[in-house]
Length: 298
Image (tube, rainbow, N blue to C red; front, side, top):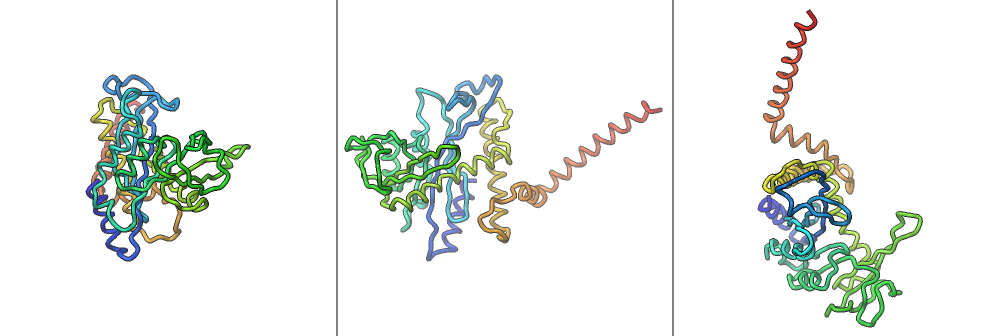
C-alpha cells in the first residue's frame, strides 16, 4: 500500500510539473477504546486522556487532492517512547525523494507535539513545521504565549534555539470563545499562519472516516498480528475508496465524498465474486431455515 501511495504521489507531481503541489505531513494520536480482557494486548492497552484502549500515532500524507495514510506506531504507555518520539520515528519512513523539490514539505501537528525535541527533530529532517502550542508556553523574554498582542509575532520559545512565528484563532464552540495558538518556523504572517494551521484538521476527518465507515475501532482480535491486519484492511478499504473518488468526475468540489456509495462501487467492481458467494450462502441458509419450518407447520 505504501508503494502504491508513493506511485500516486509521483504521478500527481508528473501531471503538474509547473505547479507541483506541496506535500503536507500530518501526525496525530488516535485512540481505539476497548473494554474487556485482551491478555495478548496487555502492553498495548493503556489509558490516555481518559480513554482506555489501543493508542495509535499515525502519519498521514496530503498532496493536492491525495489523502494517503502512510505509517503507524503503537504507544505502549508511560516509561516508553512518547507520542512525539514515535512521530519522529514515523518521519524516517518518508523517503528522501518525497522531501525533495522546490516546495519544502510541511509537518502539521497539534499541541501534544510541541516539545522542543520534537520541533528540532522535525527541522533536522529538512521539514517546515506548523504545530499547535499551549497558551502557557513560556517565551525567552519571560512572557507566556497568551501575553502576545500581535498575531504573527516572531519570538523565541524558552528552550528552543529557533525563532518562531505565532498566531491564533478563536473557536466559538461553547458559550465562551476558546483561543487556540499555532506556531511555525516560517514567517507566514498572522492571518495566513492561522489559516494554514487549520490544515491539521484533515487528519481528524480521516480518523472519523476510518473509524465510523471502515470499522477501525471495532476490531475484536486478541492478538497483535490480528490488530495490525485489521488496521491494514481498514486502511486498504479507505485507500481504494479514495482512489475511486479521485477517478470520479467532480460534480461538487470541496464536498466530503459519500463513502458508502464508494465502498459499494469498489465491492461490486473489485470483488464481485466475494459478494456473490456471500449472497449465495445467505440464500442457502434461508432455504434451509424455511425447509426446517415446513414439518412444524404440518
